[in-house]
Every structure is written in structure tokens, then in C-alpha cells.
Image (cartoon, rainbow over all chains, first blue to last red; front, side, top):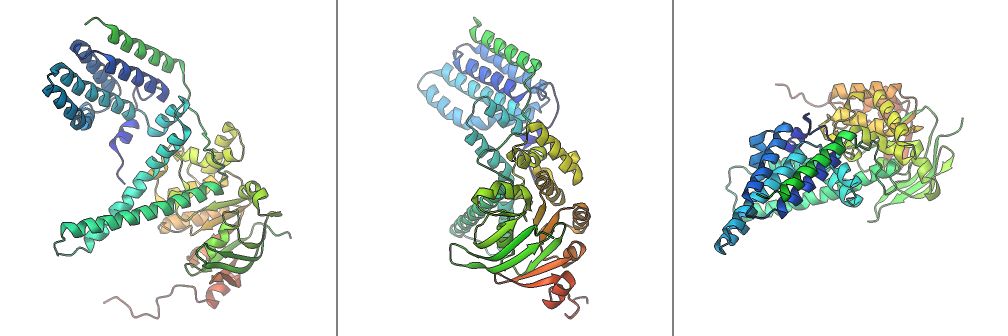
Length: 238
Length: 239
């Protein structure tokens, strides 16, 4: 089974990996707020945010090129709005829009790449994110791979029976729609099975947490220092 | 000796009108291992789903002296540990430890006690090295062991295993037999695997069209219903 690369990165060890998820989430929020409220003309400061992001990637021992490449996934969206701003004559704003969205994506990926998803979700939950939402994401993540594996099996089975005949686009769409329907029905059936398995072990509507994470002095120091640094960058005169 | 499980005249009909169980009678003694045989759709899984109140049919189901009903569900589910056919459905928590601790926490144990119990259960099944692993990183055999640990952590008196050898290779099956032989609980095993049943069970019950139509020693039931797979009478495929 192939797993997302972020998960592999999150299993590594570094000073950033060792920090509690909550400390990283708080620092990330500070970074995003400071970055997004920095004036577009403050290019030195935006460059400094970039330097901070790169420093975090290096400390987190996450592949720099790989992460920066993946952060580019936001560019098609931000470029669209940047082009609109450019043609409206606001060139500085267009450039800043691309820079800010790209750096935000890089920062989010850095946190996601240095924190295993279960710890990240626990962090969000203990910071007050709705439990239902966290449970949905947790189940989605747990079964995404199972369902995608089923989809791959179906695709292979379909390809094995395709023979040499060239299949029209229309037929291909029909087959894909059918496969999607089957996949949905199977997922529904599986959800029922999971619920039964949960009931069998005493589930009463609340998913208990066995080992809550500890927020130590180092984590608090990290969060405070990060917030102070971002605040300083935000109010810097350049 | 007192029955651990006593089922009297149990019938069940699905919403679409399909009669899944029709007047089933069954008993299980402490420490006993019973295999449930029968064709697909004969009612075996529907039957065992009644033992911890996942389904409610007509008739009487008693487990450890308690009549299974809404008032006794929590207590009954702590006594009957169900290991499902598809381990992926049973292992839904992010890590192995959290998954195994799920049951004990639901029983009201403190976090520390639940973790101690989960660690003990994982050691029992030889999976103590996988505490922090994500369930989807495990092999089919390992998943089955962890699923079993999740049930053992609740200290059940009865283990119900639904097709436990599905997805397991021969070494995985052998390991599972050795593991189950060590466990003192009474066991109810839904299976098509005759060799597996012979290695573990002393008695078998045969299901057909929702009825328990045979009950006796495993060898006798296998012979009576010709349930052993033998290809000896077929022409050899070797050229």
C-alpha cells in the first residue's frame, strides 16, 4: 500500500518533530496571521518570513526541494487571482499574493510533515476544534487508503477485461460511473461494519483518548518564542 | 455445569423479509470451543451477532446468566468479545495502542489502567512491539492479532471469531491456532476452515437456511455434512 509522503516525513525525528503538536499549531497560526496581515509592499519582511519557513524545513529535516515543490500546489489558485490583480494595475499586491499563499502552504506542509496526523488531530482537538470534525477527519484518513486500494483493484480488474478493443470515451465514463457507484455502496457497507465493531467494544457515542499528549516547558518556550519572533517581524519597520 | 451461552428458539428476519434465523437453539459451556459450519448465507454471522446484542431477534439469548436486552447490553458486550472477519473494520483508531485501549476505556477504566490492560493484551498476542504503529501498516496476520488483543483487553469470558482465517497465509493460520489454544476463554468460531476447526474445537454446529440442523463432535459433523474439501475424486490437472 502506498501512503502519502507527508506521513513518511512525519515519522522522522528532529527538534521540530519532538515538539508537541499544539505548540506547532499555535506557532503556525501566529505565522499565518503575521504573514497575511503584513503589507504587500513590505517585501523585506515577506522575504524574512520565507527565510523562517526555510529554516523550519531545515530544522525539521524534511526534504527542502520536495516540500517546496509540493507547496506549489496552491499556485494555480493564487496565480489566477494574482493575474486579475496584475491587470487591474495593482502589481505589488499580485506579487505579494503569490508569495504569501506559497509561504503559507510551505508552513502548513512543514507542520504536517513534522507531526504525525493522529498527534496533529489530537492537538487540534485539545485546542478546541469540534470533536465531530476531528472524528470525521480521523476516519477519513484511516479508511482513505483502504478505499483507494479497493478502487485500484477495481481499475485493474476492469483493465484485465478490457481486451484489445478500443473503448470509447463515453463507455469509459459509463464504466467509471458504475465503479464509483460500487465503491460508494462498498464504503457504505464498510461504514456499517465499522460501526458494528465499535458497538461490540462498548462504543457509546464518544471516542475515548488513551494517551493524551504532554505539553512540556520546551513546547511552551517554543510556542512563545515563535509567536514573539512573528510579532517582531510583523511590526518591523522595513 | 451452568451454560455460558444459552439460546432458545431464536428467529430473525431482515428488513427485506429474508428469514435469516429460524428457531435456533444453542448452548456453550465455560472453556468450550465450538465451530459453526454452514454455507455462505446460512445464518452463522447473523446468529453470533445476537450474542452481544448487535442484532435483536425473537427468542431468548442468555449470556453469563444475563438475558441479552437493552438493559444488559453494556455488561453483555464486556463478556462477549467479537473478532470480526475484516480486521480493517475493527481497527479504526490511529494507533495500535489506542485501538486496543478503546474497549477498556469504554468499560470505564482510567487511562492508566486502560493502557496497562492494552499493553498486556498486546503482549498476549505477541504484538507489544507495534504499540505506536498505525493499523494500516500491519500485515493481515498482525491485524488479526491486534483485533484479538482489542477484544482480550476487555477481559471477555467468551470469544466469538467470525471467519478468523480469512486473508491469513498458512503460517498466519498456524500462529493463530497456537495463540487461540493458549487462551482460556470459551470460543465460538464461525469458519469454513475444517482443519482450523479440528485443531481448536471439540464440538461443531451446522447451519442451513437459518436453522442449526446438526450438533456434535467436529469430525462427526464434517463427515455427516460432507464438509471437508477433497479434490481426490476429481481428475488431476497435472499434465
